[in-house]
Length: 199
Image: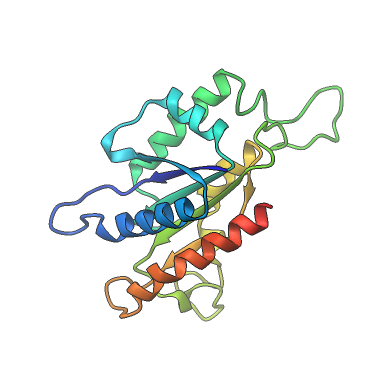
């Protein structure tokens, strides 16, 4: 299978250099190559061609977004990437023709017009937030919301064009936890599990 890795890290000198996200992307690349897959990679910060990105999505059975979570979302360069790449996929009618609804059949739902069925997508993220703050009704900030809830704005773009959203992966509490190396090591098993889920 061809797999496309999209790294959305945006460098902030002397604060966020991207080493952890690069390490996670490297772990994914090596594991996928070990398993006999082909891997393409885009580091958004280093520029990209939207038309090439459309083709990489079309050629890939799995897309992985590697990103830090900054202010509760991916860096702003990722939003620009989605706007440019998904609009190119809309204009070429390769990602979708429309939103799925038709005037002739009112039972067809919004969000069912995508062409990219049979493919998977998940987010591999680095978080300052500790894992125990998610899905916790006592969390003052998230009030019981899950990681899936917080990543909905990212994953829904892929679901809208037909992707199956798989289980996301995170390394949490990255500035305080001693478990970051274990989080990187554990990523390989997560990749295997998502590939098995795709069949």
